[in-house]
Length: 135
Image (cartoon, rainbow, N blue to C red; front, side, top):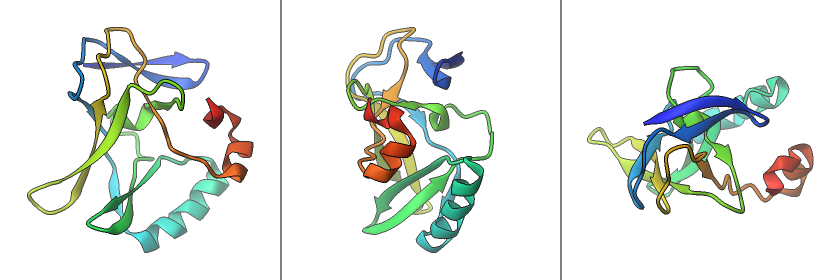
């Protein structure tokens, strides 16, 4: 369904087939992290530059998924675009009551298209550090 290729951005995710609007494209897999653990891990990620956190709200609580471990999943490698995202993250609950973070197609995604979502990062100091977040 998805392919990973090296680009000027580093690793990038591309569609290997047509995805229709509202179709699930990928899952952001990783370790579910509580708010308290997230704060500690963020300090470590800032030091190492190895940050694959995805923050979101689930059942009115702030939580995150830490996807820094290479597990072969593609969702953790989807790049940012503020101007032309073609997927958006959605949160669903599992039977065990834990959240699952999925990427849903905003429109048709054609074979060969790069899969992109808006990281929704608007903090000025972060954008100064990572200017590609302006795109």
